[in-house]
Image (cartoon, rainbow, N blue to C red; front, side):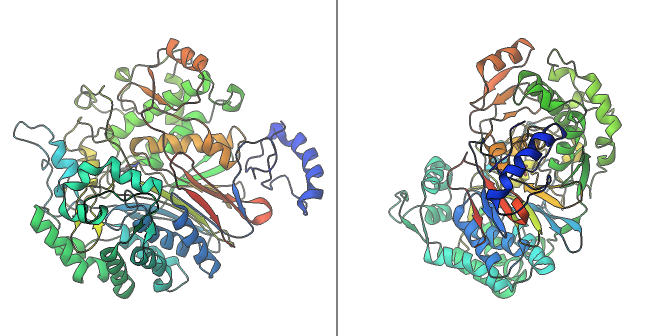
Amino acid sequence: MWSIGLNCRISTKVTSIFVTFAYLIMLSSTCGATPTLDTPIIDPKSRFHPVYSREGMVVSQEIIASRIGANILALGGNAVDAAVATGFALAVSLPRAGNLAGGGFMLIHLTKRNETIALDFREVAPAQASRDMFLDLNGDVDNELARSSIKSSGVPGTVAGFLHAHESYGRLPLRQVIQPAIDLASKGIVVSVDLAHSIISRANRLRRNPATENYYFKSSGAFYQPGDRFIQKDLADTIRRIGVDGHAGFYEKKTAKLIVEQMKHSGGLITLDDLKNYRVVERKPICVYYQDKNICSMPPPSSGGVHLLQMLNILEDWDLDTLGHNSAAYIHRLVESMRRAYADRSAYLGDPDFYDVPVSQILDKRYAARLRKEIDLSKASLSSDVYPGLAIDPDRLLRNLNKPVKESVETTHFSTRDKWGNTTSTTTTLNFSFGSGISVAGAGFLLNNEMDDFSAKPGSPNGYGLIGGVANEIQPGKRPLSAMTPVIVFDSTGDPLMATGSPGGSTIISVVLQVILNILEFDMGIAEATAAARIHHQWLPDRVGYEKGISIDTLNILRNMGHSMDEAPRVLGSTQTVSKGALGGSIGASDTRRDGAGAAPQN
Ligand code: DON
């Protein structure tokens, strides 16, 4: 298989070893060092190439934020410092998704300690939240209340998460790590096409809240245009207070008071006590072997890790590479695995501190074998015939859910790697684009609408068409179920090979799955694996979304097998990937699906 080359691939399949070996000998004279069979190398046949660095790398949705992170590496920071600097910078430069008042998950692998940590800084339901808080008098879910009111905001976790990561695992002083974000906000950023567009496309929602209108529109009410300077003074002051007082600079004192004033003003539930009591949870990552690679991801309250690993377990036994990338036979197996995993998600997943999530049963290879056996390789199953597989009454879950989901969505992922091999993988979110659309007046940031990720009523879909039950019902202090799937893949020697993740609501898990399989099964480098067309299925509705790039012949075969294939209304996900690079450096690949993303090498 002539697939080696500039693309710094990270998979060497047995079938390609002999040709690879011969080709490596040819390459070694031009590379200036002698690669080994395990050495990620370069692919002259790929149309997509990653960014290379001899040292560290930061990849995020905003090249400005990536460069800030890479500069922190150059100043002697480690991958965690770089992640925290990037995260704060995204809160300034990517207001639709980067955030201070959202939540997220960060996986950290520390090479020296050979330890991987899963930080959970997901939002929590305020103490005054209650199970039926989003139901109207008829007992139906009031989507406006659940998605666009201030009651949709959970107690924010992002700042606590970043500070915890920095304090526990960073090297540089907080002020140094946080200063670039303060500068971005106070001196202003040049408005990008993406930023201008994101505001225009959400204008109605953003104008409903006076503070938001004040922050994201010119004083005349006009839109910011690409090339304008966009200054966020209140936000700069808020980040400065975090730099001075750390955790208390956000969860107590002035910022906390401003949040609570906004709550009182707009009928929200978050109190000073809720803020003061917010805690980051360090969890053990969940990992399974896919062939000889150990894949580690986030445990609940993310569903992402559990179902990514479950799908890999189901798929592992088929020779996927021989089926051909994005062939009908391959896509059929993907869809049927997704159908079963998302069915399980609806029943069994929730905050593990409130609900006994059967993680080990779902990840049991024998359970995967049982599900795989159910799959008819010649025709599609009907989602209405597929139930959560661990024996539970599914009837209460099934409703009329065949409506397409219209809500537009935003979240953001960033990955970092330093010259010591320490690696981070972080996904953070406000939930929808610009969260609830409500800003904290005087503090310069938006509030999340993450409470919609709870199951407001068993069987009723959230903003991504995902349904849930008791496991994910609202309770005070509980964390809503998430699909965010930060992941780190380890090679057969236990070294971190790559980190990736994506936004995309319910599609996150399937997007991350495909990028990993593109690399491990189809011998693609990380840039090519990122660019390849994707599909998505989530059990209900019983449809498969696909991106442009799947051939009509393939679609016809899949339709003949019984799959309902629809072109996805928007691209699927936006992955940001770092990997161990050629001869010990790092490589990075950002997704071209959304404008402005970039991989920044440490120079
Ligand atoms: O945590 C979750 O699963 C969702 N709140 C993520 C939302 C999202 O990815 C929107 N992005 N495009």
